[in-house]
Length: 361
Image (cartoon, rainbow, N blue to C red; front, side, top):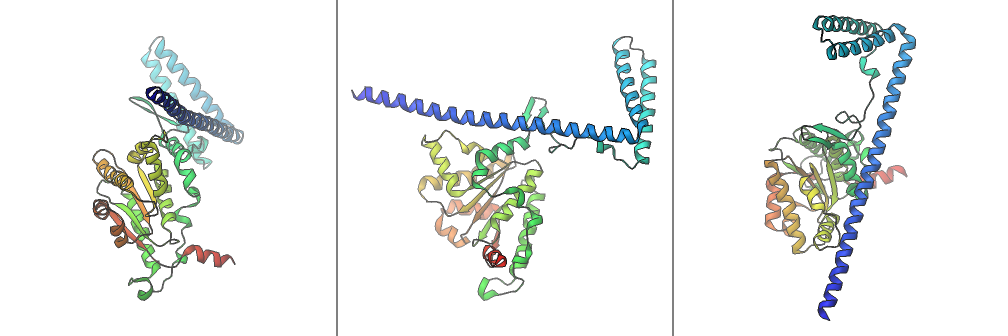
């Protein structure tokens, strides 16, 4: 009887796990299908707009249309000759005429102060030209742009702020006092000078991201001082550069990992956490702590540091804890790796959220 009950429970558990995995696979497939459809629509729309710009220009400069038609016709003739008679002298004459026509075209465009790129589709992603795929010697692979959108759908959008509005252009130094108040802030410089130094560290981090010797970043300080905002600014710049970014708050990240390891979720977020170009761990210290979570946190930090032997992976950790509080909260092996491999940026000043609230009143 015991064995029958056990087998029944085991069978039901397998069914539950299978259903969970099926849901995740279906979720990913549907998201990818939807994204590829959006890419296709966006690409086609850009091609239509590019053709419209060309036709409008043809109306203003009819001779350019004739040149393009002649170039197209001669190109077809060159291919036909190559496939039939392979008459090299004829092919050479055709190519010479095509070159002359292209020179005439460049001259016309220059006279009309028109950049040839004006007629090209304005693709959002220059690498995949809005197809979502890049051709390699091993076949087509997903472009980083669509990978990032999948990351956003699976992880980032549920936890993160509006990334698009969080950029360096919208970062205001005015919210940081230019007065030095050591008794209040315990530093010999003003909050504004300090944040300028942090901004420089952020720019340096972005510039040298692919350098294995470039340290990670630790943002430490009270709430409302711009730690999360600057993390977003960095994320935006790196996404523009084709990097993938995964954002998680420490509580959600560690809970997701444990859910997977204990069979409560089929979502193996660990693979992404270990391999994503930039991992942002926000609000470290706010999670509930136990030995299992501390072990997982150490594995994440340590694995991403070791990754630099074969792939550049960087991490930004944001916390309200001071360095001393980190030592008091976490194991020495965790803190020592952070101190040894992260550039510490200490945020101080007055709560920006409060300042914004009073400014609106």
